[in-house]
View 1 (cartoon, rainbow over the protein chains, first blue to last red):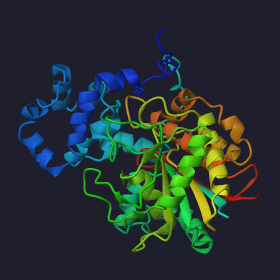
View 2 (cartoon, rainbow over the protein chains, first blue to last red):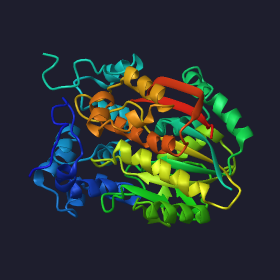
View 3 (cartoon, rainbow over the protein chains, first blue to last red):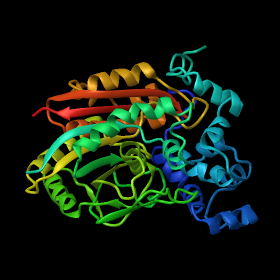
View 4 (cartoon, rainbow over the protein chains, first blue to last red):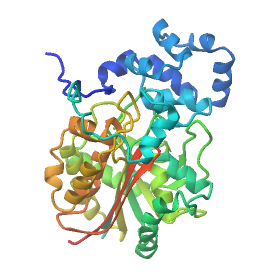
Length: 129
Length: 280
């Protein structure tokens, strides 16, 4: 029997469950390697070459090169791991987070200052339509 | 005999640590956030706990995808702050209480909680930010720490019922410890936040407030909340709030709330903070 995933009807949300952890294992371990300054230097000097040390899919590699965080989430990336790439480039976590929304970083920060995104209309897929 | 005298709940947003480290807590922007801890800092300076049992989660800093313990206990003599990708925080090393940790480990495992025992590990902002919020910037931390690390990064996190029961088991363990110690239990993380996807930035003040309201005496009701509700109502990372139930479970049946603070936003997150004194 398949595992229950009662969170799949939540809009705009990828829950990092076992399936995601399995397909994203090497991607996340690559991200983890960026904790060290030496590795960050090697990565930025030759991104594709550096990533070849992990058996990542071409899709994952392409999404890292494009810094496409939403796509990386869909490919098994975990947000705490993914922001290691953007933090290494001097980007704040909030700025990185904003790239996954339909807002500019400024608009996103402004929304947060005004109390954040309301849960109203954001609990179930389709409820806001 | 060792005694649990108080419990503290607090968010552990990394930005709070950064603001403390660069001495910006008194600025116009940050004063409203940190003033909510003024009471607690004075209170704890009088309370002088010998040991804090500090419940937190690691955020892919000291641990990676190789090993993911659901519940773990630090049994080391000390824990160094982790380098989270931009240098370790300039805070003192955390002193452990290895003897008490091993006592809790044995007691709790024999009560049915199969904790992972960790003798060497670094600790990230999940543990060090609460220390800074309560104690400021001392040269050495004024108490020892028993770290209880919980997985909230990979779904599923342990259930609320298990967290509450683990707290109760920790209480039993501490009550059977011979050392004459004043012990506090802290639950950290949360409250509302979602750091990912198109729904990022969700904040549910109403839900967070109801959680804080119920934490005094409706903890059994809170323990029944499934992780999907935390995610739906307060965001994927809002799931961390379940760790506060370990703290609450450790405080016994009757508590008195003596302080509360809530602020939105800290970066992407709703900050919650509460202080309880135990009554029995």
